[in-house]
Image (cartoon, rainbow, N blue to C red; front, side, top):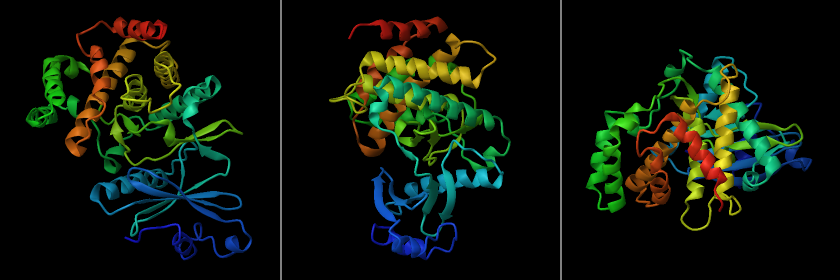
Amino acid sequence: MWLLTGYSIFQYMINHPKETINIGYESLQDGNLEINEYFKSSRNNIFKVVLKDKVLILKQPDNDEKSYIETIENEANFYSFLREENILLDSVGEFKHFDSENKILIQESSLKYDSIESDTLTDKEKISKFIEGVTHILSQIHDRFENNEKLPSYFDTFKPTLLDKYKRPLLLEDMKKSRNKSLKDLANKIESIKDIIESIEWIDNETIIHRDIRYQNFIYNSSESKFKLIDWEMAATGDSCWDIVTFCSIIFKSIAPIGPNSLNTLLTPKNAYIIIKRIIEAYYIKRYPDKGPLPASFLKKVLRLCEINLMETYIKAFLNRGIDEGYFAVKKFTELLDTSYSDNFYLTYLNNKINESY
């Protein structure tokens, strides 16, 4: 695998066999070419090539580790699925080509689109537009692919390990072998609420889910007020609620951080709870427009899955990478799974958190 660098990327592109990617020497001669390292994610090197009338994004794993290769191939698979099935979605990135030999994913974007900054979460006008855009995209995609019989042939099936009655005992066994007291205590906690966990209704293969919803994975065209959802590396089939859950879980973690708030230092707990409630409500109304206002049962499911996600994120980070981080968030919100509360408890819970003085 040939690893791209800022020095080699131009040579790669002008010699690329795809005419749609080959930019030629003309772009260099007329001064309408700019190449820079866009950013480095946890898995990939991402280069941004700015031309006169468009932007090309080149993404490549920064090494040939199996898991890194699998994620970039999975994202290419997502775009290939759309192309092969003649599905046009203006709410996702525009796919150009996947170089399977060098594991380079190439996408095109308009010059009008840019990344979203963290102040979006604390600016009233920006957060309103963001919630509207995010929930519109997710409801559109989830609805478009609901119960699509071709999905299992393209994508893996995702289900939280703690909801899998076969995988959960094995995970708990690994947790109990650890010398970490927090991990052992959490294993005992999970066993004590087994009935509650198993009561959560998970819909297998319901639709395509992104599985990594965060503001960094959206780009925004401010002149047209349009969002696009990018980075489909973790795409799978599963319960549509999980995409709302992953975003809300990040907000939950920001309420109980270790040290400075990792999302935005100005994001207060009260505003965080408001965002969580608004995004759940907006998604439900868009996804199920004929079913009336947000039912307490849907809110209960999302909040309980948030706690499942927080627990799994903490567990896997510790077991796989030795990172002991996020336990405070897990412990703070175990009340969402503590007892078999009525559906109405969850709405009251959010409203009380919003109305508290901080």
